[in-house]
Length: 119
Length: 107
Image (cartoon, rainbow over all chains, first blue to last red; front, side, top):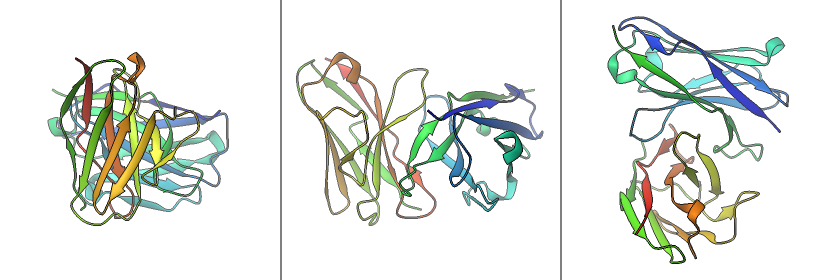
């Protein structure tokens, strides 16, 4: 059974860069797509972006200018960086795997990491 | 982007009754729609994809249907574990988008 676990700071200051890592266990990162999503407190879900096991990426246009998603297959990890954080970026950040069927829904999720942006 | 509008925001249902949740897309998403269940403090869990195909482990009291850009998740004979938040997600158009959710609460 594939398991995902987010790690990173729970508190980030405004204007700083958020760095989160997702560690994948119980399975290979190939040949899958791996995504980041977020959920502001009490609100709905927003897809942030993905990285393929080959290293190709795509991002939500609403956030694209501030995002970097990277991959370290030797560690079975992928990471998210968000620059210039503001209070509006306060959210639970999830990592997830695109379904093995090839359709773009998410079949395995991490438990989520709460990130608060505050000075 | 494709906007998904879920209604109602909150649905009050008695155990054993049927809940009907709606998700309307602002443009065609074909049948590329998934439904998720989320409980407090947990990540979402996918229940349905391709509008009406249950994922492994989803009880058959959950069913999905579609009519053009209107999608419905029906939960028959509600059990205590079904009281939760439900989201729809489309994956036909980029970027991927989610609805704002429907909370199913005990009446």
